[in-house]
Image 1 (cartoon, rainbow, N blue to C red):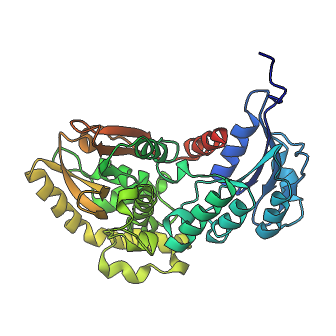
Image 2 (cartoon, one colour):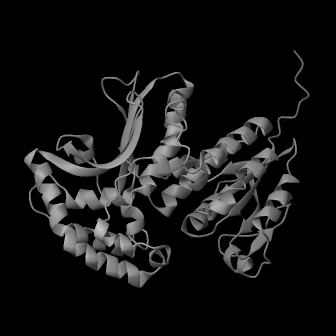
Length: 380
């Protein structure tokens, strides 16, 4: 048989990156370190104020891109989206990598996908928010064939989203997903609630977590539980059998979520305060007044031979999704297997009936999150 005349040369993959903070910088470093022949051509880098753009590829190194970006002219995200759309061709795939947490940029995903630009992101906003935006993303992807990949929205570099997709795609029946999805909450309760009596106060653990960089700049951002409810929303939207009973029209806001912020401190939680370091100091100091309540919860759990863990649950059989502070036996993996800020996710399925499929490991950090983003890029 004669050899096919069709060229086997792979398509060029042009990559545009927005967001150059901790995750973005780690991702750029990893992307530039891909061994030759590097299949990716970096054509754009953008921050909130500057954009480097060259359709033929940026001439940059790990050492040069930051100073070059700082002197580059501005370009709006909408204008960049138009530029990227013009580069899509049968010979070239174009990928937009969003390493921000911006809702405005997330709102551009349907437009990008509709023009054939693939989207990869650790940004949870588009996939955990209003159902309308998510449906537009799915519809645009289906019509153009461009893919949206978001492994790092749940568990950083851990294969949580991918595992769920594979289980569903291969016909397994999801019965229940439960896990410790927040690295911050994991750290706090791994140190606060242990199988041994006694232990540090809740406020002191939160203070140390903040000092060690495990929390957001204002710990209240973590203690609301919204990060967990966002991740649950993302997972829920990949389970077809849940869609009729759990539409989650407002996304994570539709998920029952237990906040760990005492009601008496709610007045301290305003958008202005969340951006203030001094307000964060005040919040942690005021939190000390409620240590007794947390001590009592810990003691009650220990009497039952259990520990406290902040968990997220998607119970398909009951048709419910929730983020809550729950008690688990000291022999449970949530008590015995976690350390530091690890995440752990248990998939209870028809195939994994007797023993759940467990995904566990570092669930936070710039390097592992960037690794998850780069892994998605290789999937393209």
